[in-house]
Length: 144
Image 1 (cartoon, one colour):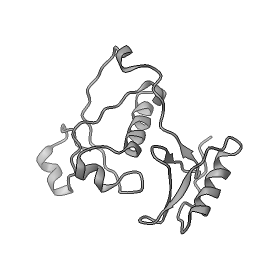
Image 2 (image 1 turned 90 degrees about the vertical axis):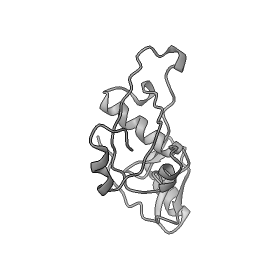
Image 3 (image 1 turned 180 degrees about the vertical axis):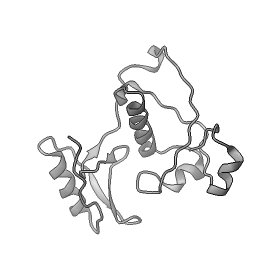
Image 4 (image 1 turned 135 degrees about the horizontal axis):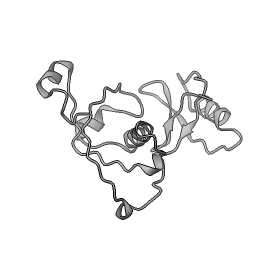
Protein backbone atom coordinates (compact mmCIF):
# COMPACT_ATOMS: atom_id res chain seq x y z
CA UNK A 1 0.00 0.00 0.00
CA UNK A 2 1.18 3.50 -0.77
CA UNK A 3 1.90 5.60 2.30
CA UNK A 4 -0.67 8.25 3.13
CA UNK A 5 0.63 11.75 2.79
CA UNK A 6 0.75 13.71 6.03
CA UNK A 7 1.31 17.36 6.81
CA UNK A 8 5.03 18.13 6.74
CA UNK A 9 4.86 21.93 7.11
CA UNK A 10 6.52 22.71 10.41
CA UNK A 11 7.66 25.33 12.87
CA UNK A 12 9.75 23.14 15.22
CA UNK A 13 11.78 19.95 15.36
CA UNK A 14 9.46 18.20 17.84
CA UNK A 15 6.60 18.23 15.31
CA UNK A 16 8.75 16.58 12.63
CA UNK A 17 10.21 14.03 14.99
CA UNK A 18 6.72 13.04 16.20
CA UNK A 19 5.44 12.67 12.60
CA UNK A 20 8.45 10.56 11.69
CA UNK A 21 8.13 8.33 14.74
CA UNK A 22 4.42 7.78 13.99
CA UNK A 23 5.24 6.77 10.42
CA UNK A 24 8.18 4.55 11.31
CA UNK A 25 6.64 2.76 14.33
CA UNK A 26 7.50 0.24 15.59
CA UNK A 27 10.87 0.16 13.76
CA UNK A 28 11.90 3.66 14.81
CA UNK A 29 15.17 5.09 13.58
CA UNK A 30 13.92 8.63 12.97
CA UNK A 31 16.04 11.72 12.91
CA UNK A 32 13.73 14.41 11.52
CA UNK A 33 14.01 18.14 12.05
CA UNK A 34 12.25 21.25 10.81
CA UNK A 35 14.03 23.03 7.96
CA UNK A 36 13.64 26.72 8.78
CA UNK A 37 14.31 27.88 5.23
CA UNK A 38 11.45 25.83 3.74
CA UNK A 39 9.29 25.41 6.88
CA UNK A 40 9.16 21.73 6.04
CA UNK A 41 10.33 18.59 7.77
CA UNK A 42 13.58 17.01 6.64
CA UNK A 43 15.46 13.86 7.54
CA UNK A 44 19.11 13.63 8.48
CA UNK A 45 21.30 13.30 5.38
CA UNK A 46 21.32 11.19 3.29
CA UNK A 47 17.84 9.92 4.24
CA UNK A 48 14.91 11.58 2.48
CA UNK A 49 11.41 12.42 3.70
CA UNK A 50 8.64 10.02 2.69
CA UNK A 51 5.06 11.05 1.97
CA UNK A 52 3.93 9.59 5.29
CA UNK A 53 6.44 11.69 7.25
CA UNK A 54 8.93 8.88 7.81
CA UNK A 55 12.55 8.85 6.69
CA UNK A 56 13.75 6.65 3.84
CA UNK A 57 17.47 5.86 4.22
CA UNK A 58 19.95 5.88 1.38
CA UNK A 59 20.07 2.40 -0.12
CA UNK A 60 23.22 0.42 0.60
CA UNK A 61 24.78 -1.09 -2.50
CA UNK A 62 24.22 -4.83 -2.72
CA UNK A 63 27.58 -5.33 -4.43
CA UNK A 64 30.99 -3.72 -4.69
CA UNK A 65 31.62 -1.47 -7.69
CA UNK A 66 34.34 -3.85 -8.87
CA UNK A 67 31.74 -6.63 -9.18
CA UNK A 68 29.52 -4.62 -11.50
CA UNK A 69 29.56 -6.01 -15.02
CA UNK A 70 26.70 -4.15 -16.67
CA UNK A 71 27.67 -0.52 -17.06
CA UNK A 72 25.31 1.82 -18.80
CA UNK A 73 25.72 5.49 -19.37
CA UNK A 74 22.59 7.57 -19.49
CA UNK A 75 21.96 11.22 -20.06
CA UNK A 76 18.75 12.54 -18.61
CA UNK A 77 16.88 15.70 -17.85
CA UNK A 78 15.05 16.23 -14.60
CA UNK A 79 12.84 19.06 -13.47
CA UNK A 80 13.13 19.48 -9.71
CA UNK A 81 11.77 22.01 -7.27
CA UNK A 82 14.10 23.30 -4.60
CA UNK A 83 13.41 21.71 -1.23
CA UNK A 84 15.37 20.57 1.81
CA UNK A 85 16.51 17.56 -0.25
CA UNK A 86 17.23 19.36 -3.54
CA UNK A 87 18.93 22.69 -3.04
CA UNK A 88 20.35 25.28 -5.39
CA UNK A 89 23.81 24.56 -4.02
CA UNK A 90 23.64 21.11 -5.70
CA UNK A 91 23.60 22.82 -9.05
CA UNK A 92 25.70 25.85 -8.18
CA UNK A 93 28.59 23.59 -7.17
CA UNK A 94 27.85 21.04 -9.90
CA UNK A 95 28.01 18.29 -7.27
CA UNK A 96 25.06 16.26 -6.03
CA UNK A 97 24.39 16.27 -2.29
CA UNK A 98 23.85 12.95 -0.47
CA UNK A 99 20.11 13.83 -0.41
CA UNK A 100 19.99 14.23 -4.19
CA UNK A 101 21.97 11.02 -4.74
CA UNK A 102 19.47 9.10 -2.60
CA UNK A 103 16.56 10.46 -4.63
CA UNK A 104 18.21 9.69 -7.98
CA UNK A 105 19.24 6.19 -6.90
CA UNK A 106 15.71 5.36 -5.74
CA UNK A 107 14.11 6.84 -8.89
CA UNK A 108 16.45 4.98 -11.24
CA UNK A 109 15.86 1.75 -9.36
CA UNK A 110 12.13 2.18 -9.88
CA UNK A 111 12.59 3.04 -13.55
CA UNK A 112 14.75 -0.05 -14.11
CA UNK A 113 12.42 -2.31 -12.08
CA UNK A 114 15.30 -3.08 -9.74
CA UNK A 115 15.74 -2.57 -6.01
CA UNK A 116 17.61 0.68 -5.41
CA UNK A 117 20.36 -1.35 -3.73
CA UNK A 118 21.13 -2.89 -7.15
CA UNK A 119 21.68 0.48 -8.81
CA UNK A 120 24.93 2.39 -8.50
CA UNK A 121 24.69 6.00 -9.56
CA UNK A 122 27.44 8.46 -10.30
CA UNK A 123 26.37 11.90 -11.36
CA UNK A 124 28.84 13.84 -13.39
CA UNK A 125 28.06 17.29 -14.65
CA UNK A 126 25.04 18.93 -13.06
CA UNK A 127 23.88 22.02 -14.91
CA UNK A 128 21.10 24.35 -13.84
CA UNK A 129 19.15 25.72 -16.75
CA UNK A 130 16.12 27.91 -17.10
CA UNK A 131 13.25 27.28 -19.48
CA UNK A 132 14.79 29.78 -21.89
CA UNK A 133 18.11 27.95 -21.98
CA UNK A 134 16.49 24.51 -22.34
CA UNK A 135 16.01 25.05 -26.08
CA UNK A 136 19.76 25.60 -26.45
CA UNK A 137 20.52 22.12 -25.12
CA UNK A 138 17.77 20.11 -26.77
CA UNK A 139 16.40 16.83 -25.46
CA UNK A 140 19.59 14.78 -25.68
CA UNK A 141 21.67 16.68 -23.16
CA UNK A 142 22.65 15.33 -19.75
CA UNK A 143 21.15 18.08 -17.70
CA UNK A 144 19.79 17.74 -14.23
